[in-house]
Length: 419
Image (cartoon, rainbow, N blue to C red; front, side, top):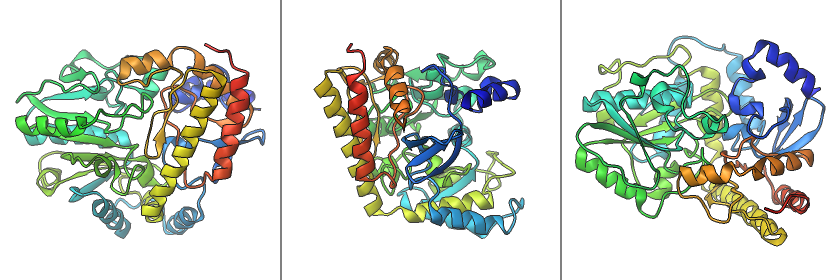
């Protein structure tokens, strides 16, 4: 049935999918179509159940279909779906975000992580009156033209270095530099944007004190430091990666977790910077569905589920999974490394943990991941259909579920080619 649905989808949707990584291009085969989800599981159109580690690529931190979020959605939708006017829920979720993240005085809600990063860069340029920005190779900041250069994740999974249709002048002021190396900054640079914990080229942690060194370098030249916390925000800790690493940027970008599974993004920072956004200042950004009442209700419900105990649970779960998988690969004799920071982890089939995008790319494209992915999928474990993605264990992944996953991985690894 999935094959029939994919054929039908290809007739009316480019590639049959609405986000390229879903196409299975980098692993081969036909994508499954999801019919429903609950807790740590999804069911495909044929009724087969999978343990899910995609988890919508991050939003489902509490598991699929948690009753608190569903109740909030149902209640909000009964009052209307969109108004084009302010709502009380917008204030509540902005207050919730700013209360959790030290340094965020004001928040502007948008509808996606791409909108958040795109606008944060515009804001930085407007505040500094400079044009150039720096990003790191392999860091993915959404599909805005200026930020697609040398992106990870979906771009890398498709074998695309940027994108056709992006004119040269759109990226003329974007400087790409290697991860884990301090870039050369000067007074012409408006902003340095990065994932504080990269998770779109697999999980490739910053070297010790690297983020603090970036903070110091940015301060020296008046460059605004932007943390793209679309993935790490409210997943790594109550205050995200900035709390985890003890480094405060000038601007934050959020997404995924804050929408509770519905389209939501946000950017925020200190009052001095955020007061430059229209209608207070001259830096324009708008959105008809920004602060959508159903999305804000879902996001607020999810954030209120997350407390310090939640993050301890998430880290325990991720550690159990990472340690278990690594033990399996070591026992069977398969070269693998499982980088993990807090509740985020990924799998590289290589004997050394990558430290930058070139090393991550070499590991991701050695041909081992597709075999592991398909054998796990056959046994009922859904990983991301691309070697550059992280795994997203949730609060719904119990010890029993993790141990079941590790057992399946053991069976799968014994049947893999040793390389």
